[in-house]
Length: 343
Image (spheres, helix red, strand yellow):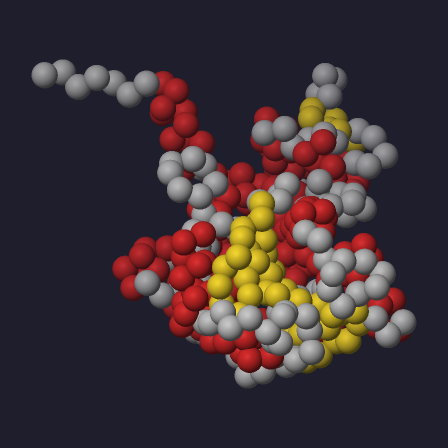
């Protein structure tokens, strides 16, 4: 029996999948070089951009031509000059909601070297990052401040649209004190405080991360509306909040460690306090989902995972919580609301 040749459309789709890393690195290079910033005032020749970025003109033209074929930049009809597109605007450093820091983070060796050992994670169930770099990711960040800065800025840039969606989707007005556990650079807490002038906030994170949060929350700190606390959520969580918030914290950890964090929060909470997990929730079925892609990154990078609603419910139950509801937002994240089981 003669085997039927694959459909050309299937071949094209598979080629797009297996070459996706090439596009990632191309976008990374454009972001790292600041090409979109150099084009903010209008089209420029590749040779001109090469001089401004200390790159080889023909090589840079090849990069721009490829990215233009993906909708990032566009080549002018006269040939040789390139201009911005809506996608390229997202790589400008001065664009609200810019994804330039995230594109840089995604192209750094920490990430692609970890994915290069993807089979290690599949065979062992352990994060490839530890295997490649000799220590867990967050320990590495503590020892390498520049890598930590790139990561925090990358995640913060990705978070801008998520934060607006979370503030729009949830009624924070009933809270008096929001404790942001593992709050990173503080962008979500800052958005909540800005939208709810009556609320006070506490941000808990590692000492080097808290220092990066100071500029973001400076106004709230100076007016007494926010406290920055250096600490370790595996040891203790600040008491006194009536709303405890964790954004993309639980997904960094396997179940046992995630439960340890949640139990510390339960110990700090009063019976009437609420817990909000801002996480991606993995949907059922075969539909495409960013949560399913991010789940692979968690596997190789931190050893954590993205979870379904059922898995969130079970995890919270083991830590002494009851899942009340899952609130979708206009972004990829959802709000998982829970209370202590004894409340």
